[in-house]
Length: 389
Image 1: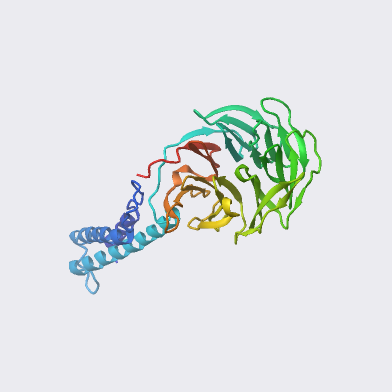
Image 2: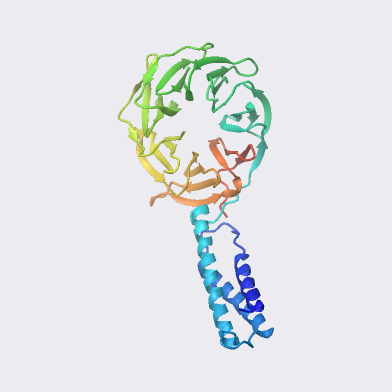
């Protein structure tokens, strides 16, 4: 092959590889690139063949150097290369966006110091927790940092601000700490491996290993509190004030419990999740469970946790929260997946907001959804009813 032929082939390959692959306006209609790029590749092949023949590259004898042969090979090769590149782009699109077009919700951002890993928002007040302690912020009418608490605690993993009186539960390496509303020092109220906590009435229910213990909100010193032992390690707990219950993720099962004296009692049979549960949220009558690489499942809290649906079209679900029929899934480096779960024919992926960044936690409170973006240590606020187009 002559130097001109090699340059023409290189031009063809580089041109096909540099074809724009960016997505444009959100729309469910996307022409597969494997049908579009072959035409572009063929055109580039024709250009390369014309450049080759016009430069006098057809003088060699005994090889395909005549104009007709060069044109045929170049056009066919360009179309084939375009098809291969288009197919790869289509596969990447399905992985990144589930076959849908990208979403671009308007967001407001508030950056924090340290490396926050936990997010909680309630009644216009929010907090993130991590290496920088617990950093509080106002969630409405605008995002604004306020104070920092628990700066001396190590390995903060979760925050509970569900106490109506305003006290703060902080889960860290040493156990559960209670901080009074406003200023004031915190106190250790349960030492050990505390994984989750939630408030129901005047009691904070605390997951410690395979136990759920009942800690009075007024507690200011560490004890081993009354509780119930479950078959496996408790990953998360959440209160259900409407039904006076506490829901618990226990390995690959969902338990419903009710206060019984100074402890808890199991109500009904456990609900099988068929996967290890990671996070738990409640919206009205619907319980939402993030299941990691098994997707997200939701259940009817009003009917003993009856299974309602499951969404699997996500590589990994770190967290999930529901607003009306819109499910927001924190999918790590894949951003936020938005799913319509109110359809009679099953859940529908509306799109993926990859520009959100590395979403590791999501919660809905009031008129907003809040996302913890891990790579920039930022909380993003967005309207959950944002238009898809």
